[in-house]
Image (cartoon, rainbow, N blue to C red; front, side, top):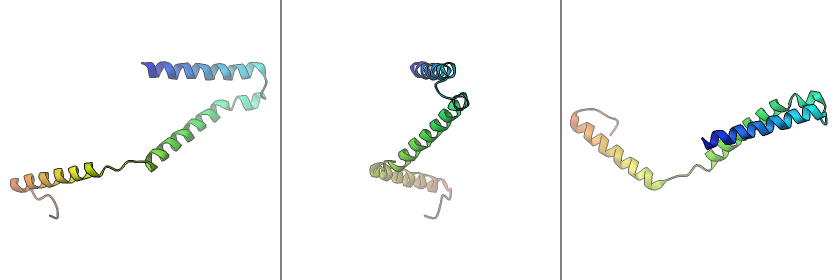
Length: 89
């Protein structure tokens, strides 16, 4: 619920700023009408940047990899005893 309130308050603040710019005519009206589009494009670029940095800093967990290999070996043995062919081993 708190996240929704933050998002709505941010949307209201940005909308108020945009309407204020339209009313005050500080920025030319042609540029002011394009501000929401610029904002959406900026959010998209920010999202792509966050995904990219998250992928570049993706942590490796060698202990978890060893546990996963152990679980896979146990599952292969289990299915081999049941008579199911599970792979090249």
